[in-house]
Image 1 (cartoon, rainbow, N blue to C red):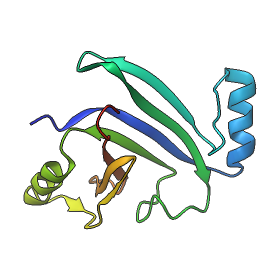
Image 2 (image 1 turned 90 degrees about the vertical axis):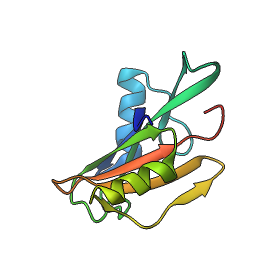
Image 3 (image 1 turned 90 degrees about the horizontal axis):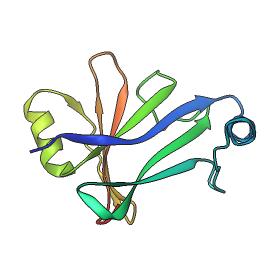
Image 4 (image 1 turned 180 degrees about the vertical axis):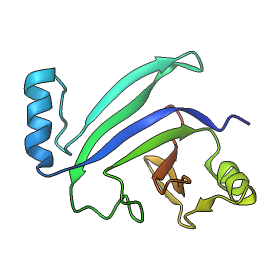
Length: 128
């Protein structure tokens, strides 16, 4: 089983997420979407007809979304089978969040690395 297949997103805390996103849009040409982030689209050899995505998104500096991590960032990794990977990580003694979210955007789970960084695991929906 492949564990991680790519990076699904880079999320980081910012004092002024909207202002920072505007700076990146103005100076680096990132196309900031109304929801506040950027969606980079690409095709892969495993999905040549579809489009994969990697998201770039600043969050408010006071967000609790990265908790319990104290880090100012969180990386989202693409995975093929979230439930199987979560079970494997639990068996390996990793600190896994018991919550799993499933929506039209895919399946999301979380694990902490040994240095206390929260990692988001994302199984994209079909074609994503």
